[in-house]
Image (cartoon, rainbow, N blue to C red; front, side, top):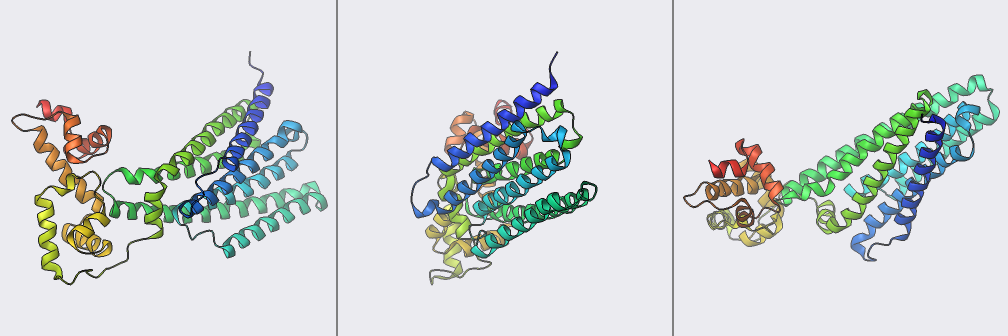
Amino acid sequence: MWDNNLLYEYSVLAGSVTTFVLALCLFLVKPPQIALFDVYRRSRLMLGAGYAAYALGIGVFVVIPLRSEAPLIASAVNLTYYLAAEYLFGCSFISLLDPAFCSAGRMRRYVLSFCAAELTLWGGAALVPSGRFVWVLAGVGIWFLIQAGIMTLVFLKSYRRLKRQLEYNYADTTVTFIRWLHLSAWCVIIFGMLCGLSLFFSKMWLALLMSAGILVFIYIYVSVENYALHLPVVQYVAENPLEESGDMVSGEGESMFVRRLEAWIAGQGYCDADITLEVLAERVGTNRSYLSGYINRHYGKSFSTWINEMRLERARHLLGGATPCTVAEVVEMTGFSSVSYFGKLFRKAYGVTPTSYRNR
């Protein structure tokens, strides 16, 4: 028979140790010391600080059985590291999407907000009778929820904006480079809300929650490390967003630009795996903003959708020809980055898998 108390203690200890080790990795493993990685480096440090706050917060419960002996103080400890982790995780994620987010003024306001909440919380714990301290906890808890809601809205707005910019600039799976941020943010939000209700959970459910938290934090850490591989692509778009409109770079006029673009399409330039909005703009003699606006107006699509639809049509022709190509050959000939991504888009567009279409 499982001992629920023992499971709870081991899970809390494992969670504290795991997140503390991950925090050390984020602090000690240095990304390249070049300007391109400045925002990423700052984000890693804030994420590491968030991990450390969580590790120390739940580590208190390893040493002192507050949950059973002083539940109100346990709630105050929870709110302390929740607030710290909220600000640190939120700033870490948002700064990757919007490099200008973590300005000195905004960070100063967050620090002052955190200090004010902590003074209220622990001043109340020291000075207010326990019967009324519940109201102090409730007030700080509401403040925490308000701040969490604001940061969530800012994150979603930044995520959608960068996702749209990536679709306007790149043809393939580049948007997946930031998708982990979206999933990670919701994992942290859901996990935080469940932790906020932890006083109402049995120790067995708490052990399961702590175990799930370990998996969430490991996933975020691995994703942050992998993100560094794609940083130049995403950072360029984040720091150089498309303008609402753009003028032609060359003086040849739109008719020449259109002829060049049509010639590029006729030559199946869209099958180039390395094609981007910037590369195409250079080839047809204009700039990114003008080309993006033209594609949106003339075709009613983003750059990514426009390119991939032409690639899919070409792939369909190759798969259904008199001597059909293999799926792997089609992927290579049409510029898709992987068989799985091609299969996903093809099935969505035509309702069958590439292999089924070829065999048919």
